[in-house]
Length: 144
Image (cartoon, rainbow, N blue to C red; front, side, top):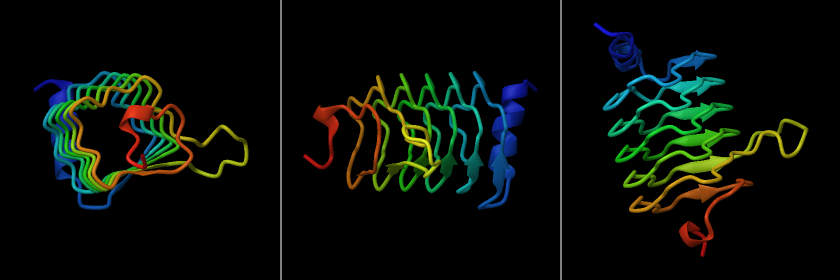
């Protein structure tokens, strides 16, 4: 078994609402992962392959998802607060009811979710909530 398969399996077997803090999944193959509404804090998924993953209801706080490949992922009801999604690929992802927000860190602009350069072509943006987000593309603005 490869290390990435172990990480995918481990995430799938954790009980619902398990809190993970400071875990490093940088560059790992987590394609088709199916965790159960986990709570990630200060975890790194930078450059990770999360294609077709089902992350419904998961919570990400101060997580690094920069350059992550989330094409076709299901992110229904996901919460992203103070996260770095710069240059992430969310094409064809389902972001229904997703919340992109900030964390009051006391030091603006720290604590804001950054989506600069994120790709959203074909993404489902139904009822997406945006609160103090950096770099959201105007053409994908659900409030427009």
